[in-house]
Image 1 (tube, rainbow, N blue to C red):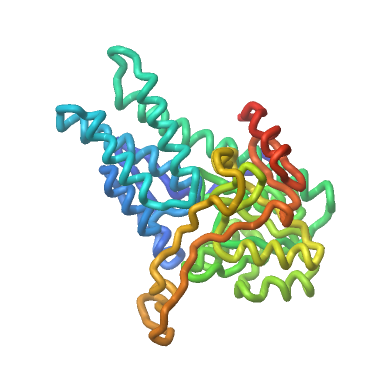
Image 2: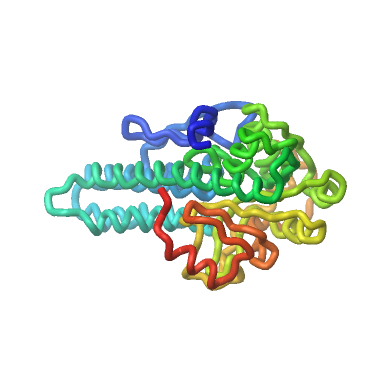
Length: 358
């Protein structure tokens, strides 16, 4: 399956070339395919904050390269470059609060700085670490795609209907995707009859990004309103809801795009299995449960406007970006370290003790 996924790869959202970071502007897809180039940590932080790049793994990768750009500028400026670099750590860390991959990547970059040997080239070391974060995410996604495929096949070895939420594909990661990576593998294995993609208001990541990725690879996909998901579970014989994650706590609770929690509730009611696919960098063992996760809330005007045009009444709008799905609603969490079925604190601890599989 690894070779098939590599051969079928068409979409990428992050590129490191000639010491600059290229990001595919996801705010204008699929209408335009525009690449933006960044040469500063502050620029990368703004790209994360403004949703040029989104998806927890992709945010972490971008932040790692942002630190490389920051270090280059601080070294060129002279003086106490390490003290000055703390400002770049700060601005990147504050760009999005919920996705733990961001902080995981920044911690890895800080640890690499602390391991510098006398005479070692700082920029070479940091660039190698950022590239390692990028490459390890791709490898994790390939591993998770195979593990998720095996889980689907274990329950039904024939074409079936799946439902997904938001965008968890190549656009949200270093390549292939988390939940969409599993769906891609299932398609290549002949196990997908149709994928239903929630439109995912208010940024429409499902209709703009997921539908675009899947249609471009010939995966049968139907777009649906978020509020149609329960009806489709009832009438279409959907076997799996497959989603990604922005943070997973020590007990297996999952923070993901707003609307995921109600999907899990509806899936349990209709007997539909619920799979979360995320690399181990998304698991935050320092938080005991989902109630501890900081939930980002964005400007309510994102709900009042569409395409820059006001469509709603002049009222107060509540716009939480994520919600938390309790572990007891989840059938399986798929990571590159293995699969946790019916997650709880003991199973999550056991998972995190394993060595990486890639």
